[in-house]
Structures are given as structure tokens and as C-alpha cells.
Image 1 (tube, rainbow, N blue to C red):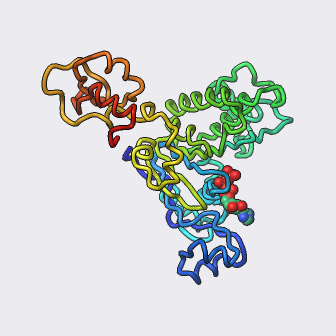
Image 2: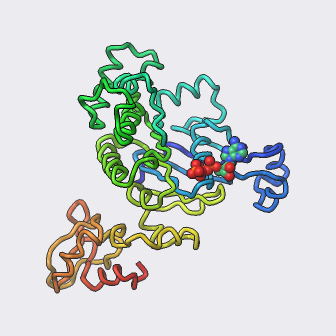
Length: 342
Ligand SMILES: Nc1ncnc2c1ncn2[C@@H]1O[C@H](COP(=O)(O)OP(=O)(O)OP(=O)(O)O)[C@@H](O)[C@H]1O
């Protein structure tokens, strides 16, 4: 995905404690953990670098307290970074005057939070329309747009319900409709499904992917759940103690975890579900007779039965139907039992 950079964050620090800016300067802008501990400084975000590309789902994953929320708040400047640069669509967010910043947030950024944050005395439709109300959009237009969004998230017919009359999953759908109504360019989702029980959570993840396949937003998604990250992400940044330890695609994380810490997360993930044929195949088209064509974007799990039922290899093709490699049962078995380097 070689799209343009929508949000560019370089060398961002957020320190809490006595005199954080002076502290950072005194230590050359790069203090180590020990120095921070001694000075009773908390490194909520330490030297974060992320470039979010247009149209991608960028997941920030880390355990509780690792700095995810603080980093994301720095990216929209809801929290003022102690140091660093943040550019949104090529504009310097950190030097932007407050009024302009509020305008950018309202018109260009959408946010969904874990605890829905719906207004209890407003109906589904009014909640969904609320951001447009704040923008001063006239009633007819905002209700028409809100109707569209409510339908998009599957709540048609419930426009006049109040939040308390909805299930948790339905409430979060309203939260999603509301965050989309102003047609944001950058969509932040902060643990949006964490409060939901596992079945509903899966359903919402599927729903989210369905929406994204239609809307193609640029998305920053926070989660502490590695499985969720793997399911949804184009790329994942793994955070620990305020620092990003690795940024990579789900496949790269599983194949080449940068540290033992990252590897620990990947250990229980069924590799066959994540690894795609294009990654595990041997390069070059089959030399002799082959059983048929398979798309390189398919996962090993989705094709294993077909491949193992054949004694001949398959040709792997790209979206244009061009041969890009060969896959056979042996390679697939190696992947399944974790024998190959892949
Ligand atoms: N206003 C603050 N003052 C002092 N310390 C803070 C403040 N906000 C966050 N921290 C600290 O910064 C660290 C990172 O917190 P943050 O909320 O970003 O983590 P998180 O990964 O989002 O956690 P969670 O998943 O629990 O929300 C924590 O150690 C936290 O205690």
C-alpha cells in the first residue's frame, strides 16, 4: 500500500512529572528509562515515529499502560506532546492555532470510544446527527445525513430509540454512525469493541471491515488485544513502556518479531490464518504439470484442504492473473507445523 502519508508523527515524546520539557532538553532530548525513574518522570510516550498512509487500517497495540491512548491523543493534539512533530495532511498540527485545530478535528477527524459516550436524552437519530448540529448544519441536511449513517450501520428502524433501549453492540453502532456523519478523513477508534462480549465483538469487527471496504477511510485503531489487531490491521505498531517496539504487517510480525516481547504475543496465533500464499510460496511458476491457480492473497488456512488433496503443485497468481510462484502440500505442511523459516 504505497499511498500518500496522511499523518506523519516524528520523535514524539509525552512526559509527565516535574518540568518535563526542561528535563528532556537537559538529557539531549533522549533520556533513558533509568534517568526518568530517578527524576520521577513518567515516559507515557517515548520517541514515537509513525506514518499513517491514506486508506490503511493502522492498529496501535499494547497492554494497559503502554501509552496507546496518550500517543493517539498526541496525534490529534488532544494531549500536547512534550516534544516532536505531527503533520496532518502536510500541515503542522502542533503549531496550529487553537481555533483552526478545533475546526480540523470537527471536520476531518472522527472518533469512537470504548464507552460509546452517547447522549442519553437524545434519540439514535439525534445522537448520530449531533456532530453536524455542532457544526451548524441545518436540520434537514443533518437529519438526512444521520439517516444515511444509521442505515449504513444497520440500525434502520431504530432511529427514534434512546440509547438505554439498545444493546451494547447497537449503542456502539450509533457511536460509529455519529463518528462518520461528518465524513472524517482520519478515523480514530479507541478500543471501540473492548466493552462488548466476545461474540458481539466478533460481529462488530466483521461489520467494521464491511464498512471499511466501502468507505476506505484512513484509520487509527487502538486495542490491547493482539487477536483483534491481527484480524483488522494493515499494519500494527506494538507499544511497550511508552515506546513503539515494532511497526509491521501482521504477517511480518509473526514471521519476524523484533523482540521476545513481540514474539510472546504471536505465539498462540494460528500462522496458517495469517500467512498468505504469496508469502510462503516458492518463487517462479511450476515447472511441469500443475493442479490449478490460486490467488496469492488467500491465506494458507483457506486453501490447505485443496492443496493437500493434490499431488501436483498449484500455480500462485496475482490479481492480474500473472504467475508469481508455486505452492505445494509440503510447503503448506511446513507452515502448519512451523518447520520452515516462514
Ligand atoms: N495525565 C497523566 N499524568 C500522569 N501520568 C499519566 C497521565 N496520563 C497517562 N499517564 C501515564 O502514562 C502511561 C501511559 O498511559 P496510557 O493511558 O496512554 O496507556 P494505555 O496503553 O492507553 O493504557 P489503557 O489500555 O489502560 O488505556 C501510564 O503509565 C499512565 O499512568
